[in-house]
Image (tube, rainbow, N blue to C red):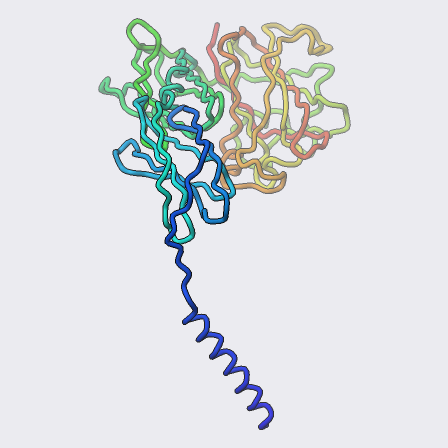
Length: 398
């Protein structure tokens, strides 16, 4: 017992003196300013500068920082570690001359005298994107396209007329894609005003963009949701059998949201898996919504991943040769989260509920009555296919 007590006392003394040494150890302070960078170069960019330099010799630099005045007139800074020889300034909202000072800083937060330069940044990103915007009429609204070559995050506020004829924000699009097109829908087919502005994270706002028309107004095209009671199956020679596992073909348009209400192929014939529908009316299709089989099947198993839509005003032939049909477009089901097959985010689940929406090229619409969907691949990589519902929209021509 005495032996154990001596051991415990020994370790207690070691701990005591170790803590005492750490608490009262000397603090190293380096009051000597570090040397400045050399060979500073800068390149104006959209809303900023790319800055490069050579670090001073030795190990007396902890980091480098550029000091500048931001859009609000407040002094700001950006930093780069001593392992880098470049940094970026972003967010200027004009093309006025800017003053920038680059300093080195040591481990005691002592700064060097600094190296200064003046320069003029290029046009802010929001204004560059605004210059690229195109607005044109579309079914049920307008279609907006733009180019964001820098791929920095931006927000696009879209304004449209309310019931009092006043312009108000109806949609905000957040994006950092290189090129994008967005469709604003739900608008009546009457002449009305639209505009948009572009914002960034630095609170820069572009000039207002209006439609390129004499009165800065556009008239959306009338879009109709096709009446599904007019739909009928057409069985062509190369169509697949979609009535396996208790399914009936009419499930495709019965508006039943149950995950177990679908059409289903056996998967025992080569791709593509084709179905054909008589829409019951002549129409120029604008878009369609394909609902996957939901529940635990979202973005997996036999849900379509890539497919092609075909159309024709009359039936070309019973053999169903796709070369005799008009290719209306190639489409792909996109999983919002990008997560592996079998894993779903909340956004993925909502997409399954809402359906995958696909637009036809509104610059090259053709009149059809019969539509075919040819499925090339499924999310599970298997040969079977199941679809819960199809909904079509367009402009009736008869």
